[in-house]
Amino acid sequence: MKQRASQAGDNDALAASSALTPLSPDGLPDVVDQVALARLYGEPLFNLPNDLYIPPDALEVFLEAFEGPLDLLLYLIRKQNFNILDIPMVDVTAQYLRYVDEIRTRNLELAAEYLLMAAMLIEIKSRMLLPPKKKEGEEEAEDPRAELVRRLLEYEQIKLAAAQLGQIPQYGRDFLKAQVYIEQSLQPRFPDVEVSELQAAWQDILKRTKLVQAHRITREELSVREYMSQILKQLQGRRFVPFEDIFVPEKGSTVLVVTFIALLELGKETLIEITQAEAYAPIYVRLAYRPVEPVLAPLDADEGVYSTD
Image (cartoon, rainbow, N blue to C red):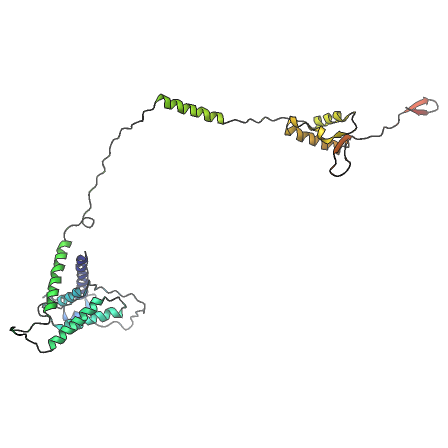
């Protein structure tokens, strides 16, 4: 997976480079396009316009992304069309260090393996500047670039193999599994019910019906005047009647309320008196006292004299 991503990153970098740097008829980058910053409407652009304002926090797009230092080295060699068996260490090392400095300038994270490869390139370049040392029994001195060339060739073979594997159709990327929904006609199957189960269910319904009681409220019409008359009849011939004796709790709360209202109406009309000797003492009810006016009967009609009965 990592190898395929490396191949994809390399292809993207080559595509971006070729988009900005068209190739000459021989397949090599044009010298003019190498110096130009970009191409605008097919014409090379060497300098940025003077009136072009680039804000400090402008977005920078860095298209060249590599999987590692070997991937970067191989890209630089193939881009300049160098012979991989005879690598010009001066040019390759300079371009590699320029790329590393570019990453540092853009505050991008730099892996330690890039710095290790930079040190290795500098070491190889330094060893090539020194006179070669031949070992005993060897006709030619060992090339300092031999180990680097071997690693680059192995990495290139791995990239080619990864590219070939990437061309194989993959599930989820190039094709999907075909799925066909087949409707199944299922016959409904009803469970078998015994007679005893139906009987038990019916009895359960009857039990729940008995628990539900319907309360029917009937309206009872009561007359306050009628109960006023009953209270007056109850007080006739009695001096004092206890307040509690006026009420009959057995007749219900409605009758008690109407009786109490009738008692208040009688007191309002001064037909009865409600007395209490002291606080918290028993309350008594009696008929109101009314003085009887004398009735005059004439003794002598001619003289106009009356007598009282």
